Amino acid sequence: MKKILIIQGHPDAGNAHFCDVIAQKYVSAAGSAGHSTKQINVADLDFPLIVNKQEFDEGEVCESIKDAQQGISWANHVVVIYPLWMGDMPALLKGFWEQVLRPGFAMRAGSPDEPFKKLLKGKSARVFVTMGMPSPVYRWFYKAHTVKSLKRNILSFCGFKPVNFSLIGGVYEDNDDVLYHELSKVAHLGRDGG
Image: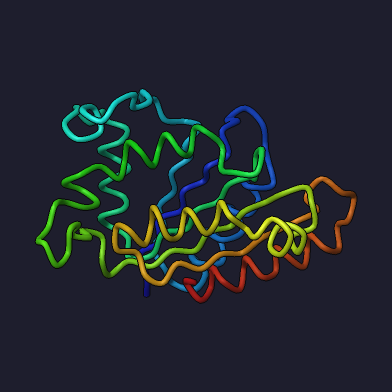
């Protein structure tokens, strides 16, 4: 059985969103299969944005970020859920990653053969991205660049492997059959811990 941390990255804490539905469906399915789960809603956290390299390298880590780091340390699988905003992850989620994945926690200077030591090896990740456009348009025309960047430049850089992603398009359309089908896939992944 896996220890799974769900990071729900929608920046609007005041309203229910499809990202919330995905998180609930995943947690329910994972729990029914015997996996342990914890959840972080990024919109509920209070943390400052990092504005310079010195803060990133040496700045004090606030309590909500320390708690998030403990959750990541606890988990062996991390699920990230966010909406596509202006072709990328929301700024609040990007700020969260900058705070959480700091030197000394996620990576540290290494040797000439390995310039950065990956400190989060042994963990896997699944990324769910919701969007209004059809997901094949994002995947093939826009080349899914934000997901590739999150995978290569953030999660894999810190040691996560494998990093898989699921694109869920058409969330603003009135098409309950498609969304039901997507939620069935979410539940399947939750049961499998994938």
